[in-house]
Length: 122
Image (tube, rainbow, N blue to C red):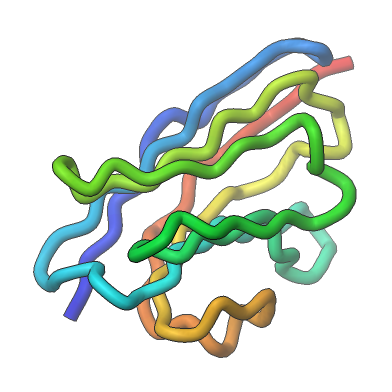
């Protein structure tokens, strides 16, 4: 079992930055892939980024490449998402997830946090 708790969401103006954090507990993250997904009102959940815990390999959805950075802190068992140059279309509930495969599909992740709201005003 892995418990995930997100923090760091909020309201920011377009062009601003936010840093989300996901604290994991309950089980080792060794061998796992950690991911961030987001869901805007009326839209389907969307993959944002993931990172392989063991080697730090990352992948991103095209719309956030160059603006968002996912990282991990092995000592603190946390995953972060640094979001720069935010746009109104980034507004969504952002959720952290833990799984085994480095997938972009949400149904491959077994553990999820409760989500944190990110709102970007124009």
